[in-house]
Length: 425
Image (cartoon, rainbow, N blue to C red; front, side, top):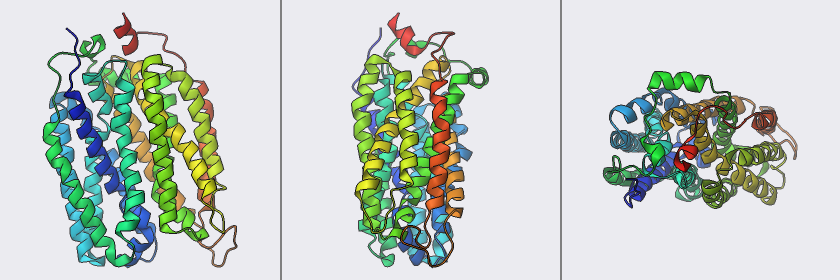
């Protein structure tokens, strides 16, 4: 007998809160990079950027363990691991921040631990939605849990500039985030392991062994096309979010204004995904959505090149970020779920882990590369002020445009059945 249970929402809430907190941890220092640099007495913003970058690489390093933990120990253990690493990471950061410039190494260690914590909650929403939800609700469930991650980043973009209005308040900011991060430790105890009975037919189909699953994924052309789009656009989103204050500050934008721009990107994206995900749960028009959203994302990144202006103007950046957020946030859960449909009966966490690893790895590479593109000449002009990052925005726009054609090479599955077809029989 197939049945859905109300308790599935409790588990989804746990994943959402954990993803919000770990993302806030990732983006703690970026919105106040100038004050962070001053507080730790650093000669440039590059070490502050590494506080974001190291999270990406820690994520990639630990991610291969996630499918193993989920298959051998279940989702409870995965979430408990994330909760423990998150708590330790946040409080280690506070100790380092309280010490001052000599504690920067401890702050970096805390960021690494947060990076280790992230994949144990960010790679699992597709696994959880497959376990607890039907085909008519999985996109929405995956969207809620996955997009809680950028929502946490939005909180950081908006709140952190108010928590640290000057360099001396950096420890206070880190303390507040550490106190808030303690909440998931309690919520993690509520995560349900698995439902007493499956929600639908596709949930009980036997999944492929890991080695066989990896071979199936390796041969899937559609998967790798989606991987290319997902990894590149997620990578640029991560890099842009980490550098947003540094993109606009040389042109005279304040820390608060840069935070508002980043918040528009994320909030509009969340609203658009909340509207589109239930529609796609019923229509399953995944491929059509991908072919609409990918060109919008590429064009938005091109338009982003022209958004920093002197004197500062918030209208242009906010409009472009609204378009980028709406398209990219809607695309994220669709890509995760469509890859599962393309590779079923591969277990959902296998494809989602590979996708997230690709996006986080490129996020780190792009962040390092774009930081190196900062203008180092003294003087400058109104259109190209000193320390501007115009070249980095051009790089972002050109690469994003080159990825657009991949959306039109993705085809419908010709061999085998996806979960939707299984549930419709």
